[in-house]
Length: 173
Image (tube, rainbow, N blue to C red; front, side):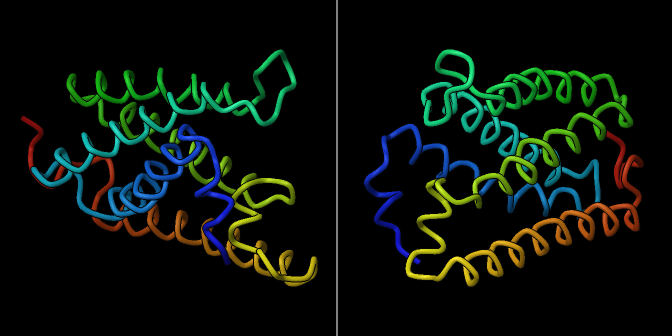
């Protein structure tokens, strides 16, 4: 593993990585913990802010160009920006099912799916994480990381349901 590719990357890429990693960790924590508490609301605001900055930073990253300077990943960024607004609006009107749906969609699409694509050969995170490994070692490590990321997401969602996802631990105020 080496941080050299990341340290040599443009500022937009560094900002993207600096916001998406805490968003991934905080998002899993929020999915797993009781909902409707003061901590959930506070950490949820931080998570939304991280997701918005992460999404906005992608509009300055143009490594994969399929349509002009943009790629399908930019569609996920637009989804996250609209989803953030929808998640906040749903929470404010106490529509917990809609809020949960928007947040879960942003987490699964914007973090898990997009994160898995960063592990592909030729991508910056692949170069950083798998530097010095053979193709087989890199593939095995990427598969392990993908399995762990997916398992953590599934467990966080499942664990969260044990605490009553969709039902507030405290009434939302």
